[in-house]
Structure formats: structure tokens, C-alpha cells
Picture 1 (tube, helix red, strand yellow):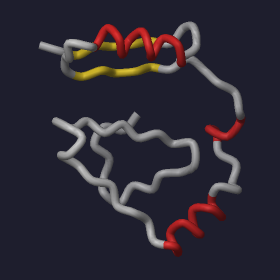
Picture 2 (cartoon, rainbow, N blue to C red; picture 1 turned 45 degrees about the vertical axis):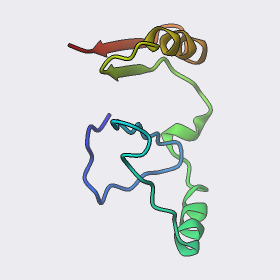
Picture 3 (tube, rainbow, N blue to C red; picture 1 turned 30 degrees about the vertical axis):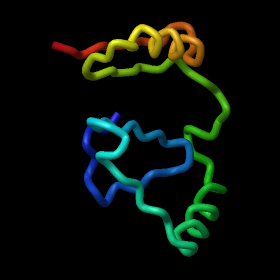
Length: 91
């Protein structure tokens, strides 16, 4: 887990990104160029630890509080494997 990775970080197939933002309009995603997409396609053929197809329990961190957090936790529980951990960081 990398919290606030450097701007030149390279993400590989299977990597996941969690964006923490005040709202869905407080950040933006850069649309990749055709050349970038072609480069990513060739890189996706490289086998990575994430591409084994074997799922393992996950460790998830929720930061902050929302009134519907209990619904989010129930939804998360439907997707993660038994033995996964959830840490809630809130004031």
C-alpha cells in the first residue's frame, strides 16, 4: 500500500487506486493518449503477481465518516474474502 505515491509512479495491470477526495468534482483523471494506451496494452501481457487469478484476503482502510458508512461496509463485505480486515480511521 502506497499512501500518496509520487507523481511519476507507474501503475501496472491489476493495481488499484483509491482516490480520497472531498467530493467527486474535486479531482480529475487524465485521459490517456493513443500511444499511452498502446503501451499499456503491451505491458498488460507481462505477468504480474496480481494476474495469477488467486484471490487473497484484503486489508482496507476507510478514512472519515459518512452517514451511510454502514451500507458501504455491508457492500464491501460482499466482495472481500473471509479473513479480510477493515480499519476505520475517524474522529
